[in-house]
Amino acid sequence: MTAAMPHFRKLFLLCVTAALAVFSLPAHAQLGERGTQVHDGSQLKPPAGARVAIFEFADMECPLCAQDNPTLKRAAATYKIPWVRHDFPLRQHVWSFQAAVNARWFDTRAKKLGDDYRDAVFASQSSIFNLKVLGDFTQKFAQSHGVALPFAMDPQGKLAADVKADYALGQRIGVDQTPTIWIVTEHSKGAPYMEVPSSLDNLYQTIDRALSDTRDTAAPKTQKRSAAR
Image 1 (tube, rainbow, N blue to C red):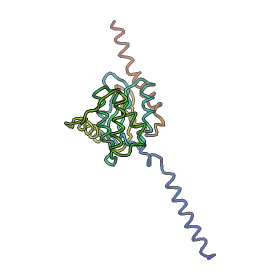
Image 2: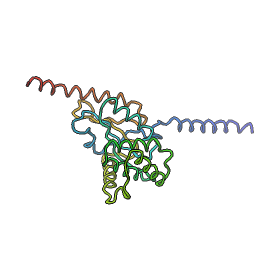
Image 3: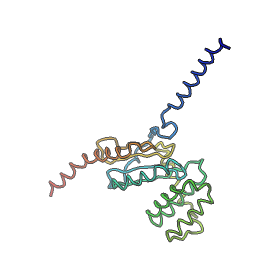
Image 4: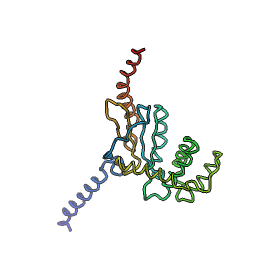
């Protein structure tokens, strides 16, 4: 037994080392914070007339998306920049696709109503566990906002096609997980788009950098217009 002790001690140390190696892996390996390999960045730009925007691909059943949602909303309001929200419902989630279709239907009534529905779903995500519960939740949301739901929200499948088009766009860009978030710029002297990890650790710093990069490039145009007057 005594002779075997060094062997067991060595084996124990090897096991401890292996365990520590596993737990010391970067957090993004578990939380989906690794950089996305962009295949086509041509769509990563703000809406017309905006210098900077938050550009997000999200799944309404994704816990990290729900966690990030209030922070992204607050950042967009603080900086007064567009928040471009794209649907990327993951196949393993049972109700996220239908939730995206529902949000699109509310968009047809008013864009703010659609965004309010998305925010409400994220806020109540933990209590929505199947399509029936989602349906009941959606009915109550509509009633509370004075909206009558039709018998069929998407009888011709146009809204579902729009959700699928968003998903296909994400795939073309290189999205393979949610949330995937970029700060995108127009006519920037720096990077045209910068990915933000799902922890949102450097969200505000990235927006500050994007605004600074685009502010400098916009200045000569302003000066030129003033001189012409």
